[in-house]
Each structure stands twice: as C-alpha cells, then as structure tokens.
Amino acid sequence: MGLLTNILLAPFLGPIWGTRFTLDKVDRAVREQLTDDTPIKEDLMELQLRLENGEIDDAEYARQEAEIMQRLRDVREWRERFGMSVGGGPVRVAESDESE
Amino acid sequence: MTAESATATELAPTEGKYVYCIIRNDRSREFGEIGIGSGSRVYTISHKDLSAVVSDTPIVIYDPTRENVLAHEFVNETVMREFTLIPMSFGTVFRSENDVLALLKSTYQAFTDVLDKMQDKIEFGLKILWDRDKVVAAIERDNDEIRRLKDEITRNAASSTYFARMQLGRLVEAAMEEASNRYVTDVHEQLKSCSVASRSNKVIGDRMILNAAFLVDRKDEKAFDERVKAISLHYEDLLTFKYTGPWPPYNFVNIKLKLEKAT
Image (spheres, rainbow over the protein chains, first blue to last red):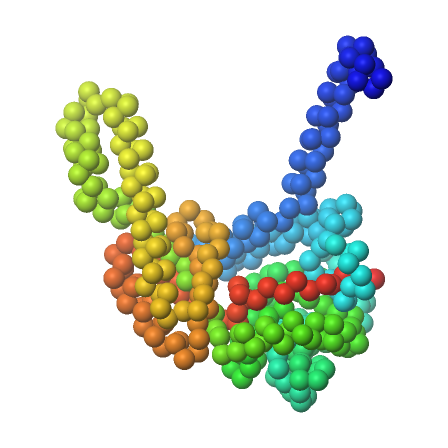
C-alpha cells in the first residue's frame, strides 16, 4: 500500500519530499559547521606556531587569539543549544552512562 | 571576555576545584601559588594513595588562551619534577572537593594502572618544518628527470609548452611528497631505539611535515636528546626542528572519564 501510494502520488509528493530532504541535509551541514570546534582549534595552533616562528608579534597574537576565543565560545553556545556535550565548565562523575 | 561573562566570574563563588593532574601520593602537598586564574594556591586532594592536584576556582569556563594554557602546563611541569602524573584535560573544573573525591574513588583502578604504565616515562614533542624553496632546490639538483625538464623549459622559454610546465609541476609535487615521507620515516627510524612509543598528530600550517610526540623512559632521556640533536644537525640545511619537553604524557594517556555536566 505504502509503495503504491508513493508511486501513484509521485508527481505531487516528489518535489515536496525532494525539498524536505535537501533542507534536512543543509540543516545538518550547517549544524555540523556551527558545532565543530576542530578547525578553530587548528587555527589556534597555527597562530601559536606563527608566534613561535616570529612571524607575528605579541600584540597581533593577542588580537587574533581574542577572535578565536570568541569563535570557540560561539561553538560552545551552539553545542549547548543543540544539547551536545561541551568542554570546560563544571563537571562531576557521571552516575550513569546516559550522559553520552 | 564579554561584560556579561566577566560579571559571572565576579559573582561566582571560589568554591570550585580546577584539576591539573592525578599523582600517586598519600600526604597533603603544596605546590605554591601558581594556579590558573590569579595564581591561587595549588594543593592536593587525596583518596588512599592517589591525589588530585587542584586549585580553588570560581565555577567558570576557562578559555584556552595562551596565558591560561601556560598556567595549566606550568603546574604540571612543577608537579612533574617529583611525580609521575596523569594530566587532566585543560579546563576541567569540579564543583567541590567531594566531587573530586568521587572522581578518585570511581576511577581509582584505571588511574593506578596508568600510573604504573607511565612510571618514569616522559613525553617529548617534535615538530619538523621544511623550507619549500630549499627542498625544491635540492630536488632539482638530485632528480635527473626534473632537472632535464627544467633545463629544457628554461632553454626554450618562448616555445616551451604549458604542458611541459604542468608536467614539471606535477613531478616536483610528487618528488616533494616522496622527500617528506623519506625524512619522516628516517626520523622515526632513528628515534625508535631510544623511545617507548610515538604518535603522529595532524600537521599544522603548510610548512610542517611532522608533528609527533614521543614517549621516552627517563633513563633514555639523554640518549633521545642527543639523537634528536644529531638528526637535526644532519638535516639543518633543509629542515627546522622544533623540539620541546619533557612534558607529562599528554599524548599517551587515554582514560575515558565518565564525566557529566554539573548543574
């Protein structure tokens, strides 16, 4: 019944499904981007390396570091909003495995 | 820090415990006023023969700024002079002494096992950067095919084709990748006999070809040190070595702590 309905109604449902699927994928991509701090941490490491190599001075380091910290805070905020785990902040031993 | 979070910091009571590392120690110990934040007192919270090295802190989220990270590392370096330690992740804050004790109790066996394994082991970091221009020059000197193609292109500058240039570019790229692999393998090979384990991390930036950590037995520290210096001397025309340590075994301890957000 289900399959037949799909086929019969395909011209009507097709495009809507298609759109929904795409939106869902976009949503996921955006969400991943908003909640992934890996590239930000890489930027921080690279910044540190540039300071060590003498390519930038302390003032420039401080300026860019502040920007990176803000980006990390933004990611943390998004992660909290999506109910994902965040680094930092008070922790305690988990009472069950449910926290994962 | 935004005005809002700065206010939060001021309002938060100094009742939390920032945990730096876990050591084997059953007495109360002081490590000086070197804690993260404002140089608060660093001391121990113990359960049986294990201690957490902590300092009092407001309940805040610490940004991984250079200043904060260096403070965290400095405490671990200080503790390391006397103890084998298990480093905690940067920014780990517990609400109370009791919560820290709960960590020591619930993870007692795993901490003990890892401390046994890490007894008298230290970590060294080795990053290798290359100078692209010098490496390309060395490749052009040593690789017959590339040299010939390049000579040809230079001789017939006007008539040399786009494709010849493309081909040269591809050959140089491949030769560089091959050279990078060769250097990295050679360094690993030479350091194998005086280290216990190694781990390669993702390279940072476009000049780095190796970003590795080596676990070394304290008794082999001198041998490892001398070997690294010899290798860096051997490659000094082409490569820059960034050698750091001794560190606590940041890259070789992997205890999955079951922690949850304290509300």
